[in-house]
Image (cartoon, rainbow, N blue to C red; front, side):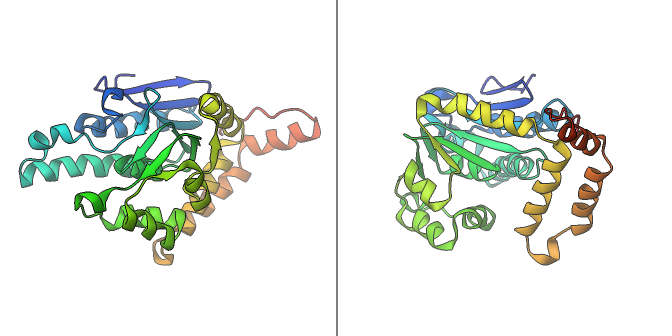
Length: 264
């Protein structure tokens, strides 16, 4: 599909929608046009029933995403109005990732720094290579982080580890990230993409409505009680039991075969 920029690659393969940050010469630092492309790509994947899982990755072998592309800050963030426009683009991209109804996986190779870690935290699962490193260097730069981004980190790793990450501003190894719960799995870097493909295929082979309902319920559980839309969650659960996939799952179990789910 046309992403609007060569710095973002979108392709669909075997039920997986790939979204690749493609600026390897800058360690996949995210530019303004890349932020604009993210919601466009996700909208296409959300509308395509053949896409069951969305995988985010960085081009090349050195980085997932290393943060924002600071080389364009003078032009894109030189005035208060420009900063507002730039931040709104980033906010829309992050909101699209957070609100994606399909499961999302961050395939992390190499550096995952600052805004790159923020992007990874918007995904449901994070799988990294054993040479990956993670950091939020804000305290070395004098930057302030908004509540939403810090809350996502604290929700994943807990308040104590979140404080350690921000207070020290140091780089953490893949194993340290796993211990904190920042990543779900560590894989030898040479095996990372095949592993993620297989993992995504496992998810893609399951009942899409069930996966969607589970994601909605788990996401609701992390919200404040007064912000939980439990009626919508229950409607998603009810849709599973009313679906052809539920019939297919029962039939396949009785016939001792692999089910062929259609998402309806």
